[in-house]
Length: 205
Ligand SMILES: N[C@@H](CCC(=O)N[C@@H](CS)C(=O)NCC(=O)O)C(=O)O
Image 1: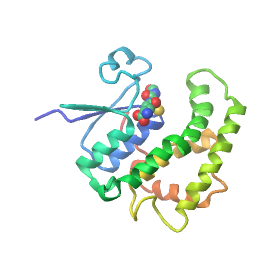
Image 2: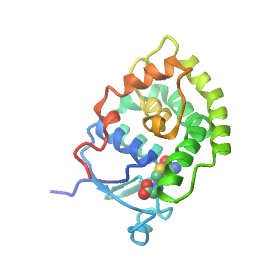
Image 3: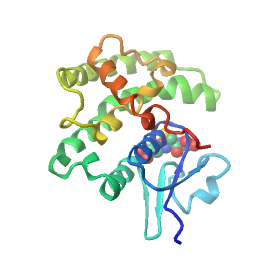
Image 4: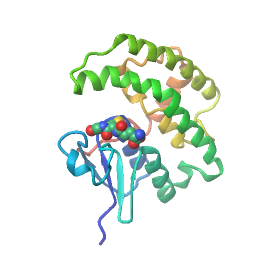
């Protein structure tokens, strides 16, 4: 019997998405919690020179970057999760998430959670306020896109939904204010009906 492929993860924002995808797609992986910037740093360089998670290790392929891992898992286990006939639309949202929505939501996540918790650094409130203001303009775009539809691409959840929602499980703690955007809140509540999104680490370390 061959060893299962391995997904290295932590509970932080990007690896959370990768684990949620893997479990949503019921990918038969071995999940290994890692501290690539902490105790595992030197050993981890051989797996990912960036010393970050997530990383997917297969016998003939090692992938870092959440989006590449999601693309790989979808291709192997659930092609409709990144549907070929609409792959550009999914990619549009993946890119938009990185450069706009999660760009600013991620700043709030970093300022309010990572800085205070791991770097002994208080929140830079001016930076957080600027991030919330930037986020607001893109949240309005997302809210409009979700008016009258359940999911971002087609009529079923795809990786576009998982990626754009990356920071939202941390919204309360990160002070990400979604109050003005009812469609965004309803969409994230729909996503949270999936146990893999709501609680990706259930039963894992
Ligand atoms: N662009 C990368 C970002 C990876 C990244 O920054 N990972 C962070 C967590 S969000 C990390 O490994 N931090 C150390 C840790 O979680 O222990 C991706 O999407 O995979």
